[in-house]
Amino acid sequence: MSKRISWKKGMRLTDEVLRSADQCTAEAISQSLMLASAGRFGLLPSLRPFQLSLNIASGYVEVTNLDVLAITRAGDIIDCTIMGGLTNVSNTQVPLSNEEEELFLIINIHPDTWKDNEDGSMEPTYTFELITPQSNLSDHAVPIAHLIHNGDWEEDTARFLPPAIYLSAHHRWEELRILLVDILKSIHEKTKSQAQSLVKTAISIYWPIMQKELVRVNTEHATMTPAMLLGSIQNVVGGFAIACEVDEILTLEDSTVFYNFAQIPYNYQTAYLRIKQGIGMCRAINEKIDKFSLLSAPPKPEPAPAPKPEPKPDPRRSWLGKQI
Image (cartoon, rainbow, N blue to C red; front, side, top):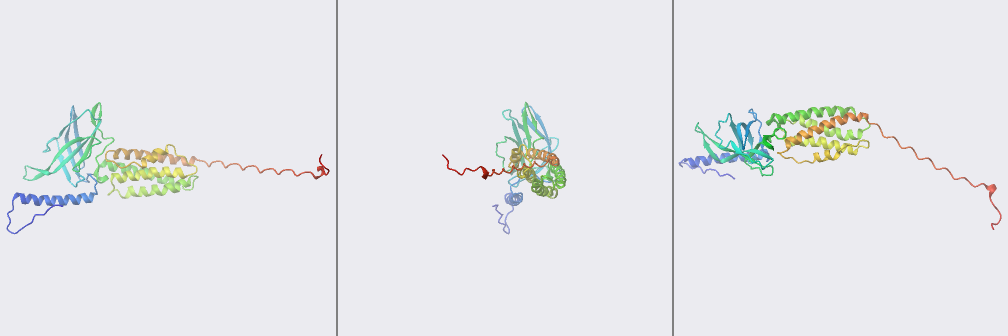
């Protein structure tokens, strides 16, 4: 717990006392933010959209432009702007290693190290670092980019997006949610029209699951997180596999793929890629439901022929004498 200054009448207000008071206030704010975010970290919703430009040259990566507002696991607020290479950040250039196949670029905040600005105020110190996927992320850091090595180093924007507290913190997270809503609306209409079809067992199981997730992603967008979005997609995908499993007519090809996807745990490193894959599976489900109307009931087995009664003995041919 942070300590408060023991204020006394007539005490001398030295710079050490005032700095301690500032530190106490900062720690209280940080603890409140940590509790509010429940251990989550990443980009915060802001009127300033996240921006990042990198210069990847031989042997190093340089952050040339950056505008980021984020929160760390420890409750630190990262509020850093680098425009046109003009910045007070000490190490905008970080050396690359060709011994790795992928690296994450992170921004660290040093809450105990403050620097003076030209306007007479102070701000925390930020540094950049490259870590491997197996490295533990510092509680005072946020990943902002993913680099892959394919002969040369390049930024991977197709499979990675910085983690976010809410989807609204980055337009690309929000675009995935909107895309999912459109697909679920289409699935909803198709399942509704086939409620009395031959596969009504599967429909009766899947329709409520899909309807619930449609309402969720369509109405809870203001507070929805990437983890919640992935969970909704997993319910849609896993629920379809279960419905097909229970129905007496349907057989889902590659059902193991659907079940395995529904059990993938959330990981900030792969969340963007997994959500994109899940949306692709939702598209496939939408196409599969189109084929429900083409299904026909299995032929009823023909009844087994009734056994013929054994012939009764003819009494006229019976032998009444002794048998010798």
